[in-house]
Image 1 (spheres, rainbow over the protein chains, first blue to last red):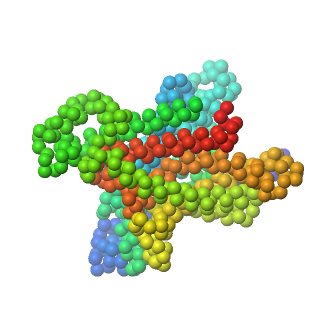
Image 2: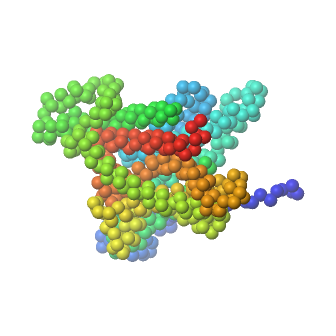
Image 3: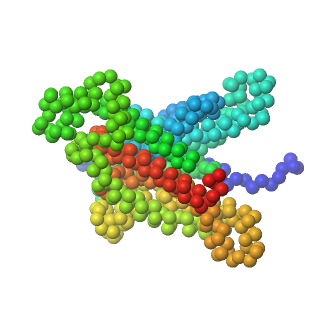
Length: 270
Length: 309
């Protein structure tokens, strides 16, 4: 190991790990928390409304006497699940359509890129709102709307990279040797795309969680008894003076989750 | 010229997409759409089967989906948005009322973000790795992770509930602008600052920039004559792309602060399933994105003539 040049360790590495740790901490709270302290996110006891933390409810009670801890844990499972489902769908669609557009070129490419450009001009929240009105079921509507919004980013990344890779001498050589498109994709295209996919997926998940919380906050997302981050905040806002901890818990959890995802994504290369 | 054609096609696609989405929304509404529209047009007391049938005939609601969709798109492309199902006013008038309030809010927010972000970014970019650069990185990363509604919530809690300095909602006076525009501007400023910083650091490291200083220009003159113009191109381009974020923010922030703008109207229209209003506002937002970006294309070509080639 004499020929190692002293390359400064990229600062991005530590940042990404911090992000991953933050996300993991929030998810552990959501998944393990209710197992450690059993409780029901929907059970009310009005006598305890807005009272402070106790053994059965580590974060106290909300205005209807429901355990904030359990509602928060439930909410922290709901949004990431929808977000992850949407990102997976969008990532897959973007990957398939992106490689397809780059490989086929011509009209296929032109039609898809025009569609992507048009979607890019529309605010994502608007599309999500419209899908929520079309698709029955709020969670399903969020999934459909967010997938529709998020695929564009994956599509553009995949298309740009694939075009570049397909034009490279390495791919020409592979083709001349008689290898098929599947082989080209596996050995040449995927390794180029994979690291970008992680960044795009982390950003996409953050966007999706933000959208669900934002719409919940303005009362057009998830419906009332469902524990959801934005909805919890707007429900607890009037009781800020009586129970600041109750409002701060979802605020801090949301911020930690989003900050973790942003750090995990790293700096977007432009 | 070429860019304008591309933007024109984009605008057309935006209209078709919104047409398709709102058409699907209309078809997905529970109950008979013809009765709803008739009620919207003639008032709830005047709806009878004849009126509903007339509407159904006119809009082709009863028939197969494709001709109905084409009629729908035709109305859209002739800019005939119909009337709001809730207020009974023509959609175009309603939007005219609300657009002004939204544009004022968005304009103040963008201005505020430009005052806050790029100057700090440029200062940081002049000394990459310096104290300001590192502090700015931490602050902007933190700010970017705060969604606009959360920013609005935090600002309301601190400035209007805790210290009672500013009104939490309302419209009409200058002080009502502060909280909503700040809630929008801080997130935008975080991104602006990063872009200005990266551009400045990149340009500051280029040979021509060092040469400008060798030939005797002071750092100030170098920045004014050789730095700002180059930094402004990526900044403007990003400002155009941020427009969508801004519009999303406007929708949420208006709903939070009760600002009587287009975003507030959109949320209400969605809530009451007022499809013509949704269509009109959505089209207005989508087309303004295309318009803003077309203008920015032209402006950046002016600033950096190499791009026009």
